[in-house]
Image (cartoon, rainbow over all chains, first blue to last red; front, side, top):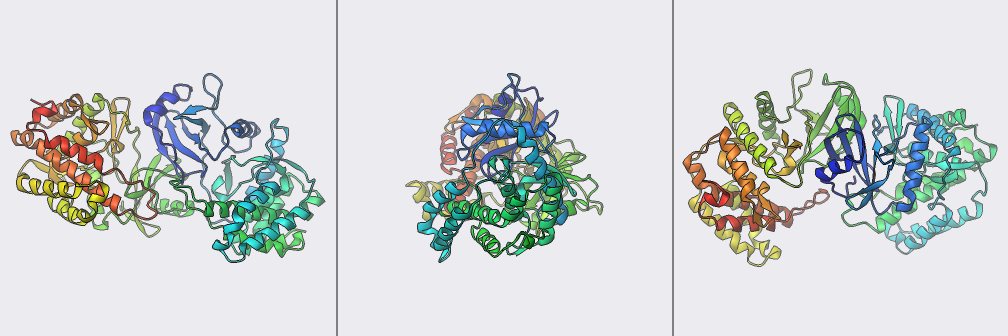
Length: 320
Length: 320
């Protein structure tokens, strides 16, 4: 849950005069997004999301995120799109923070993932990858190899406080991935954080992909690996090949995998597990005062990492 | 902000099958109400509020609160009304907590109170008092004299940690109020917590009174005194007689004051200030782990209390 910056109704009403989206009818701080402050804004015309970007999101990256959402939404990816004010600007300031109004998407996030959800997710993810190919901006993934090495350095001294031996295990995995991480695979804009919280459904129909604030340029298959970790484990410990098969099969119907991508999948899944192990470990060891966010268990991703370390071929994911 | 009990979309959807209010379209935990977990629920027909009652609200009081809201809403008080399920019940269980769906009210809470707000508040409060007169249930105010004495006992040992001398000042005020608190004044159902957060406006028009979870039976003028404290101070220190005059004059146009009520107002305002001083002090000294609520400054209400201690006649409130 995350409302960091408190917005007075009067300030929101004044902010709205820059837009042609109707008159404010309701404004509620919502528990959505952990990096930003989000408000559900109802006007007499429609619901919208008002987002204030907090310090964890770099201001210079905002044109990339907002431009990407608009680019994808224009190409029928079911994602929010920034609303432009009368002056044409989508990004402005509110209460001293960068702020934007974005479109509202119907749907709810599944808590109990079913294979049908994974199938819909696979198609939508591939659609996002294809639609992003002609997006003119790019942003390097700062949570890839170099980022992991930096995070590992900042965590290793204390990692064993969380679990004895964790520091050694992380150091050895960083080293292994450094030695074998692929140089070239099909790449482009990826979402990089497509957890269940960030995907909306109405029934089995996927209606929304939200929270593009980790989007960056990287291997497409790495994005698939992130989803596999987030959507295909049961109780954090058991890998559900039925879900993985649905996810991957429906992805590949929209954007076929190259052989190299398929072969790299176990390694990419290890990297994807390490990335969330490290960021969660960092947040666990460095809690932010008053952030109102409960740090997530880093060890969930250690268990997922260990599973992938034991995978010798993508057939373990239900693939042929 | 308060979302204590997490509700999975699947559970909310199952809960909704008990009602005839449409299909779930969106569900967002909202930062509203400090005692309960609140969700803004959009169905394909309308927005609603889904409330899960947390431990601070006594389950045996819920029929009073829900019955009162329905009673008042039926009499055109602009307040939420509980939605009945197909079986007729408005109160059921969700995730092990008592839960209800209540109607959604348009409007936003003012942050910068203007005299026009106070005028609208006065009329609405008097309307609430009149409409509650034929409500068949009652609930004693457990935050009146006896409650203050109990709270004071639990806080006095530590009160001086917050401010040297605070314990002595509270004890002497409790004693003074005990000696002079009125026995009989016009009474009935009062809201008892009508802070700005609990009142919605569209422009200058009052559109909603919410959060009836402190409602009880007590002196009507005590409810007025609570509002005077919450709405008529500037920067917590200066009393704005223009606002007080608006509040009281518009109240008295709808429900005239008896002479005794007018005379008792300075004393009632001291009691109302002491009540929030004590509950805030208790919460300050006994923070609840993981409550996600920032305790409010108890000393704000000490300053208000001291102001009223210096008042010798209701003319100080702009009244004649």
